[in-house]
Length: 185
Ligand code: PRP
Image (cartoon, rainbow, N blue to C red):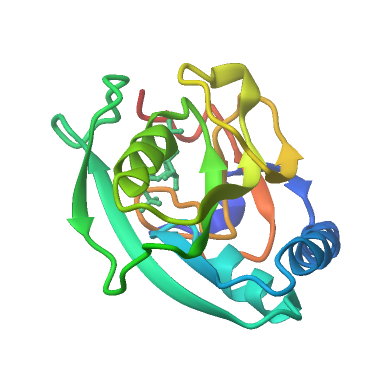
């Protein structure tokens, strides 16, 4: 895989700004979940960087668990609103205060399907925390209780978000050069 610099058009959210916003979110979540039974659920794989940084900012006791889902279809994102669970939770969420942690909400179909599914398991509460909101692309209406940044409709990568599974480790959010890489539709 080539050096990420060859694919980078611009950094839209630098590391410092990301971390500062995550600290703010952590403070807000810590206030809201005082005395509650907080369970953070990370949707793999993109949400993993955000989860680990966010949880370090929390001052309330909490558990973590993981889920992975994929769209139906031939590996390409479908706007059908259907997702398949490829890795399920290991813990029961019944009666718990669940916070879904996502890197990005785009069409909204992934998180909408996950919410529908998890609601059948009767959590006490279920909220969404997303680092990035590509609001222009929304097709399914989803509540985002905690949002890091609203971003433009550009192909972004870094900080959990990949290009062909690479570059998730970068500490910032960058935009891909359109002349160098064509985003999958
Ligand atoms: C990304 C992201 C969300 C979803 C958002 O995951 O992490 O789960 O897409 O898109 P939507 O709002 O249009 O449904 P992806 O399927 O790329 O998998 P990854 O997290 O493993 O990169």
